[in-house]
Image (spheres, rainbow, N blue to C red):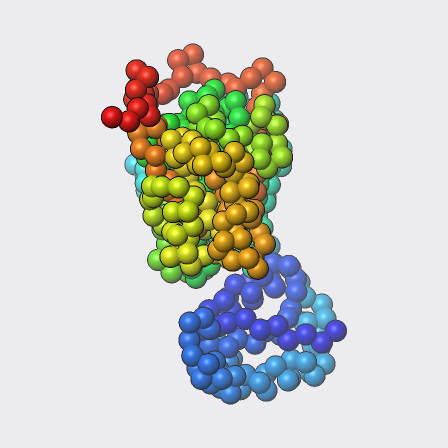
Length: 416
């Protein structure tokens, strides 16, 4: 069937590389960029003007793409495979290797732990799966070849992030999702990941005081590992595959935390999504921003949502301190899903997607506050298949940062 695909000129190199990767030769037409937030007159000028890539009249190019016979190259395209990286690098000094990783774009710009064979072998003790076992495929853009990666490659990333074998099952589950933490877009997407289930306590994740702060080892390295996996397995190359206009610092750690199931008045998030309480899961969210912090009842949440206007297709995820969640329950919201339905109906009765509004519980019960984000939940992955049969592999003395002591005296939630 004659086809004349059109995409803005900013993505010309993306789609042309995509054709080379998959052996598909399409007749693209490229109108100027941008097409968003410009006037109707500007868009009409694009149509009447030229393709900035080929310098041919845009509408004439579309007409010829639909009517000219296929060339031999178009009838018999050849797929082009990108070269693969070697499994091992030549021996060198530590300083030179750190420099190589930075200059090659294999890090997030921060110092890493060099993934020596010995360190990777130690990391692999964190799962029973074989090193060469396939885990998943990832690409930061839909217009690129998705790259495959193995258990060993994910373990290498885990070492680089500073993780220990006990963290590997969660990081492998992230890899199995196939989702990058930084999808390529001219907008600047951010991600969030939330762990539920028994593994939270086994590996010492923080879901209490400062859950979103850099005060916990497991939260820090697991969140960072997702970014390093995206860079290396998803092939992040600024300007080539990654085009976030400003980017966001959220990508460094991807707002990695666990849910405070013990102090929540509601069922854990993963249970509300159909998983068992006994299962350990990691749930992935995508949006742009942490929008505001708030106090007050459900109606105040509604006011905030109305003032913001419903970004990202009307998606909101509220991260509620346990005190805030208990306050909402005292209003009669025993089920957060019912609260989502009420908010949707009040915000936009025609927008019948209450699943786009979610509630998570995390915090140390210092204030009944909630954090408003425009994140949308898009996937939950079970961690358990990656855990060794003998249980989570821990060090003889597991590494832990100082543990929060607030509220252990029983004073939490007491109002003077």
